[in-house]
Length: 252
Image (cartoon, rainbow, N blue to C red):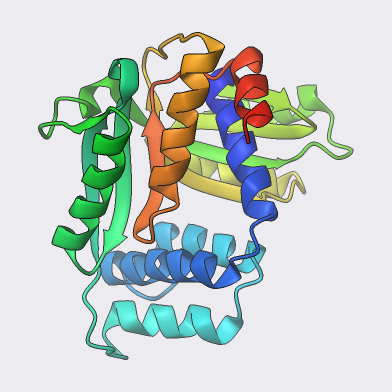
């Protein structure tokens, strides 16, 4: 999963430098709203909501914005906009498998925008299920390595049910079975480890290797898809190697 880790690192750095705070807050607000609509507005009883609120706080989203997003989800506050969560499946250049996770108030608009990017750069939409089988949903936890000893973190996470623990660019990332995300996160917090990010994401079962130039082009298309207003995240089965990262960064 190290390739996936490198791609996550790039996106994390990009997010940290993204001046478009309003766009980030919109995405986070939608995530909070959908989580509250799905499981209620109590963060102690709704794990997905707690994860969404924690991410919003980590991005310094104003408290009033977070509370308003929760009220929208529970129906206490109405703004006339109905947000849907949709997972689109697609293929990029060279047959790269893509899962495009969106929150939208207009499926037709969102699908049109996705198709435009794919068609322009050699991709196409896929039938439901034709791509998703190549992925499995995993729990993801990330935080700066800081003064934490890797072996100690590894043991804490593994004993709580983690599958994999990697350290990359002074950042520790942990992958867990879907059902173990909460227990691993709580074990880390009990060990006085401050978690920066925790979420569920789709991880490729068999990452696909590509030459750096071709792979960098795929990464650029993924970035374009993620820049669409309704896109939350794009997952792919691209194996992101150090050479591919270097090629991508030199082109941007």
